[in-house]
Amino acid sequence: MKFLPVLCLALLAGCASAPLKPGGGETAAAKAANEVLIFRDGDEWKARFRFAADAPLWAFERSALLRVEQLPWRPKSWEVISPGVSLERIGDFDVFVAANGDVPREVTIRFRPLAEDLVADYDPAIRLSDGTLALYGGHFNAFPMASREAIAALREPQEYPTHIALTAAGAPLLFGGQRVTRADDVGDNYVYVGDVTMSPDDPVATILDPGLPAWISTRLRDFTPSVFRDFETQMGPHKSGRPMVIASWAGTDFGGVSTGGSVSPGMITMRLEGKQLLKETPGALNQMRWFIAHEAAHFWLGQTVGYATPDEAWITEGGADYLAMQAAVRADASYDAKAFMAEARSDCIAALAKGSLAEARRRNDQRAYYACGALFAQAVDDAGRPRGKGFADFVRGLIRDDADGQVTGAEWLAAARAFGVSGARIGQIEAMVAGKLDAAPAIDALLAD
Ligand SMILES: [Zn+2]
Image 1 (spheres, rainbow, N blue to C red):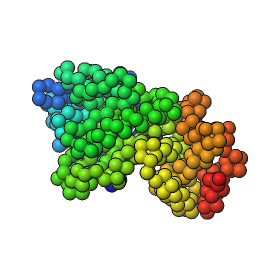
Image 2: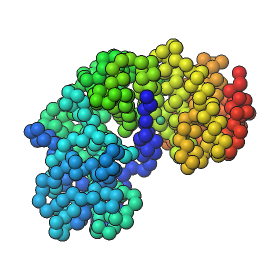
Image 3: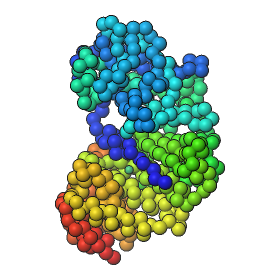
Image 4: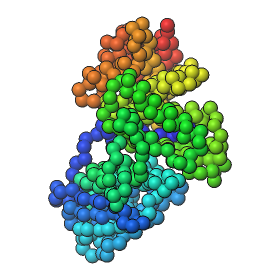
């Protein structure tokens, strides 16, 4: 059983990037934003687009295919009600196409919330077995284009200012950790449509599918708030308000174990499925805890303070893994932290035998950042121990001292030195970041008692 937080890095890169810019769409003259209202109308979900400009085509920024069928998902979910416009696939994009001239300024669709996996993008909906659901706003972002040829030639989506609001006929929603009846500025986030009991001091809103096997609910209800509370005690407040954790249950049709997870700003989602999850096993429990703890750590190390470039993802991924390891030990004294660090050591050695850490992602070796970064975090943890400090205190210092919220490798190393890591050990980390080498001696020197 292995969670695949495939969207984690994309998310963090997105968080670090510039705010939404008006798109360079060929027909985009106006600076006004598109207005989208997602709403429930009786038993149906609808969305009303009010476009800010005239264009013969509006292409959807997020147009990923269904993972299983490798087909566009919108035709399975969306039905255009307004006359004079249809939904088509052109090149890599789902597109509103005008029958004549321009797409009407107002277009309404009805849609069936689709809880299916997309290729490297967020599921359009997350559906729980009591009928409640979460809807992802980012799929309603569209940008104007002048011709089919232009779309067919387009490699990267364009951005266009869009305000997305969601309401469910007065039913309670959870958005940004708050109970509301209308979510405004939904953006690239999920809104949960359903009621959640929370007390004001809950550090996280935990939404558990009532269909989940009881042992999973019990464990998650216990572990999720405690990991957030511990991190807050150690590292101070994070900047995302109250996060949401949603664990959904897809039943036992599948005989084995199927799990998936994703992270979007302010939210962690897990999808659990399979007969083998009906009974508690240490392996399944550890993986679930690990996923939540690692992603929870990113609310501090990743979102409140992040890296300046994905080449230095060892700062956030290695750090989050180390914090998750410490959380695992707190939750379960029998957790084998030594085995975790031994795996980090051997994976880091294998990665650096092929080239530098900075270039690992271009070798498609994302694991290198987790493995080597966890070793660097341990060197910091070791340096603080004589003063009763640890890696979490170091992260707290990064959050306090970093003005722009983006820590460069050089800044991290300077902070580590100030935290007590020796110059010789800083040199070992620098060598591992910079080039291909036999990392075993450097690691042994880095982590010697
Ligand atoms: Zn991560």
